[in-house]
Length: 275
Image (cartoon, rainbow, N blue to C red; front, top):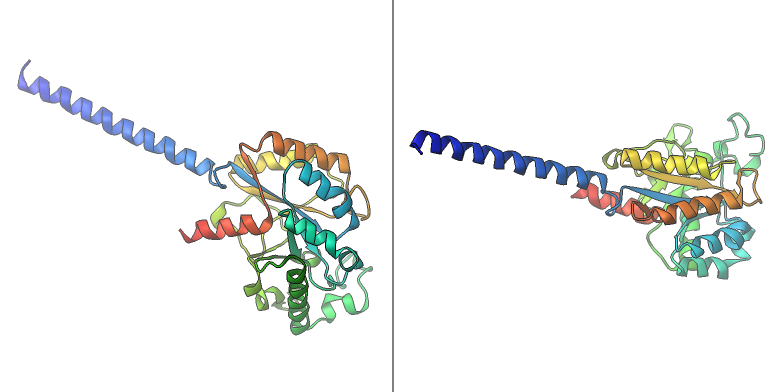
């Protein structure tokens, strides 16, 4: 074999090796990008608003049966909190998150369909100071129940503003994140932790909710569900059996889906963003 032919063969082999290295790196990078939610393809957060009796009586037993943890946004002044503190404390001890849904759940009464918001619970009558004070009082109550410092917040009715002011920013340091109501399958680096996107489940079937999970998985994103009534007790309701079917799907696919509390997913997003 002459030298010229030899060097051509060697060069071809080197070029092939370089291409293989690039290809393997590309495959590895793609795999990492599709498994960027704590080693899973997507994340799912199950949140429940307003401290309803059905959350303790029906939802938590279902979650426990599938070994999932939910996030429960409690209204501090609700009798369903004061009358059942021992049960909420037990839920927290089982790993469920108790989130802050304010002391009195104020919502803006000047929006369409808000006739039910009257008097002192009309957010348009609040000062920023009052809103901030009530949020902090609710945090004190929640810590007395579960003994925890890390917590997340959920805007009542998804209302962000008092006149021209984002009231949450005055208590932002108290929380890991705040859950909003705007939908969307965002990339991790596009998530706004002061207004985390979420999907309201209102009369939703398991099929519809599972489709939302699949969409999040395809997008390499996450989905936060907002539940109120589950099997009753609220006009914004999801059938208990449809809720169970969603949990069953999540359990069967937990190899690809990370089901976690809002506080844990928000902390993960924050930690990854800082890397």
